Amino acid sequence: MPKTLNPLQLVADRWQPSARFVQRAAFACVVMAVIIVVTGGAVRLTQSGLGCPTWPTCTEDSLTPTPEMGINGVIEFTNRMLTYVLCAVVGLAITAARARAPRRRSLTRLGWAQFWLVASNGIIGGITVLTGLNPYIVASHFLAATALLTVAVVMWRRASEGDEEPRDLVARPVRQLGWVLVVATALLIVIGTVVTGSGKHAGDAKKDVHRIPLDVREITQLHVDLVCVVLGLVVALWFVLRAVKAPAGTHRGVVELFGVLMLQGTIGFVQYVNDSPELLVGTHMLGSCLVWIAVLRVFLSLRDRGELHASVPAPSGGHDTLQPAAASSR
Image (cartoon, rainbow, N blue to C red; front, side, top):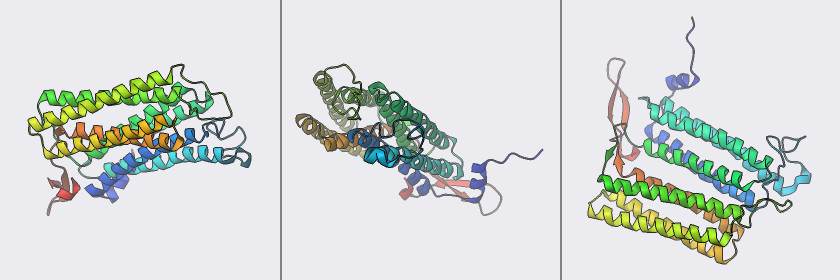
């Protein structure tokens, strides 16, 4: 019986990417995940949410936007096409991770998790259009994109470290404080989607789009309160890490997170007092991604999984030997 050929195995037999290439492919996934969030926000902020009034085609009779649909149809359709670019980047990361020797199943699983998140979020995006920009579906669309960003960041981190069992670099209570920071930031992002769903930018000016029936000022105040909680946790974590003499890299990550949070808070304040101008709202969405990336990086820096190893063919025999990768690959 002929042996079943796996296309990824065929690639692995003919191509051996470097550790740096795999890391860059994983980082490209992070960049594309951020771009998808920002361009999705641009669709809403330019009132192009129903630029293509149906899905998966743009109209019932056309796959692409027609001239009568104007710039809104072009913006919405372009955002849909970016999904294919994202799929290509994720596909490259999966292929590079699979072709890299020694094979790291944990890395390829993270790549496939991104693929299925992209596919599922594409369906959620279609439901968003078919339901006339229902704010709850819009919020779930954003949160699914944030989940994609989460997996992309984890894959990026895992691509630069080994496969040993995780070893805490700090005491367990400090690690738990890191968990609390992650949960609080996640809640902050969720409440941010509620603020958006009850606010002024519904996504389409030609249709009476349903909004979440909450007082936008009250829900915004809750959002601000959570910002204060997250800032407090970041400051507390910084002091604790200094007290326990944690690695310098972890300290640096907390300082970077604090800086991003302060910048994001400033943008949010200016946005609020100026009645949410579109450009600032879009910038705030970008800031949301950067805050989440910084939080994840801090949390992941609290543990270590050993050195990344490179595969080097042995002088004789058919087996690979493992040795630590160059520091530039870390």
